[in-house]
Length: 426
Ligand code: UD1
Ligand code: CA
Image (cartoon, rainbow, N blue to C red):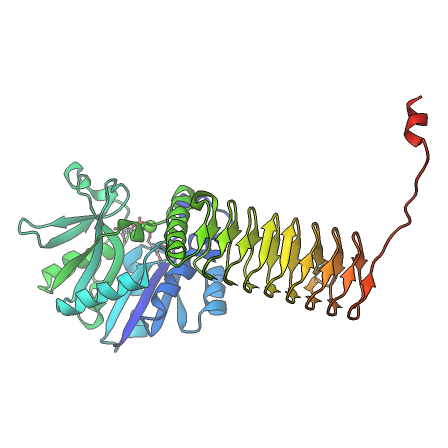
């Protein structure tokens, strides 16, 4: 089926109070809000239009760098959500399929839900379907207003609502499915006669009703999914919801999470059965963790990490863009970045891979082959390779490649001054 997505991401995000970052590029566990939304529609739509405006260049760059099938469309100035969608009209002039509209600030929606939503639209022969849900506290959302016979009437924004309308708990999720051919004319007819003086996308509901089109609402049970992010407080709450959801899934699949309240794991992290994640562990970005591993307490995996089976990544260990092969231990207080660790490697406490050259601003690789043992407090200055079986003495700074089965160490001589303290104390 031909379905295109339109994702609204041009708004200023005033309530985020950010000088540097457009709202949709704020992150949850290392991934932007907009990234979550595009990821959730990219398998069910064949083309995605992202409406950009505020901080347009940054949002465009993000989309172009990460999503091949997504196009950005500029909305300038930003005159409201209805005006935002009207920007794609030239791109969809002769298009007659479905358009799925979503907001870039609603990252918790699931692909599965969107599929059900589209199915509902199709099986009801709907021309326009809006997603709604019931909130105990509906403040700030548009309210779904129904006729006496329960059919849809219109959507009223908080700022335009009468006290009676404000009491309505069914809210607009900001997600719509439209038969483009039937609804596209609405976008040239929207008016700005409302409290915010904007072209409201929500007005397509009453427009559709006036045209005698088939307009429906799909009521979502799990209201968490359409939680919108308008403030930093919303961002924190959404992060918690997303995290809890994924930890539950991991536990269902046979991963032990000792303390879900203090553990953060990004949705893009796969974890094998019987792995134990200890408290205060933070795992962001894309990672693969094998079976029967022990991660944490207080471990930080920063993305691009592949951990094979039966590996230990212990307390205060940070790992970034590295592969750790099976039966290897990185027990305590270490930084492993841009590295490849073989099997049965042991990394002593306080080991650092020095991967960054601040002069050339480049990163280099550390390779430790199978059975290498690194003594405590070692610095491995990359690029560097330690061949199989070699031991490195504690406190060494390794700046050259080392051959297999050797012992390598750097030591300044140990000085002992007899009675030095007792003389000083006299
Ligand atoms: C909107 C809905 C509201 C719904 C809520 C769900 C309207 C008028 N209101 O309200 O009914 O309950 O979402 O979360 O649609 N944007 C643009 N261009 C603009 C203005 C906004 O692209 O000119 C984008 C924003 O970047 C954002 C999205 O549209 O991603 C929604 O805008 P926002 O201002 O957050 O609308 P809400 O007040 O949340
Ligand atoms: Ca919003």
